[in-house]
Image 1 (tube, rainbow, N blue to C red):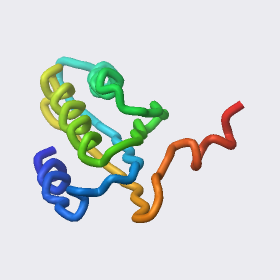
Image 2: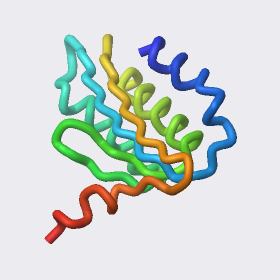
Image 3: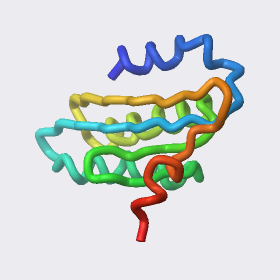
Amino acid sequence: MYVLLILLKNTFFMKDFTRKVNVALQVLPKSSTKGTYELVDKAIESIKTSGIKHTVCPFETVMEGNYNKIREVIDRALQACMDEGAEEMLAFVKIQINKNDDVTIEEKTGKYKK
């Protein structure tokens, strides 16, 4: 968990980036007292309450918006899992950035919505 946070906090090239980005977050928390889905639900709940645009998928949650705001949301989601009882966690983050344009969830999956 800490390696991931250090990497995200040290991405100085993104500090002033103003375009929308997409970030996918997958958390795999482990606990001897809580179920994995129960802990994942806490991470998703923290993303929902952030107000950031997001889509919950079977394996990850995709967020859209300002990179720095999403970084904060990731921090809170990971902390929510730990606060709820995770003793260990793997977290995977994927980031899509376009230097000249916004990146949106809609552009990738809109054509599949019924």
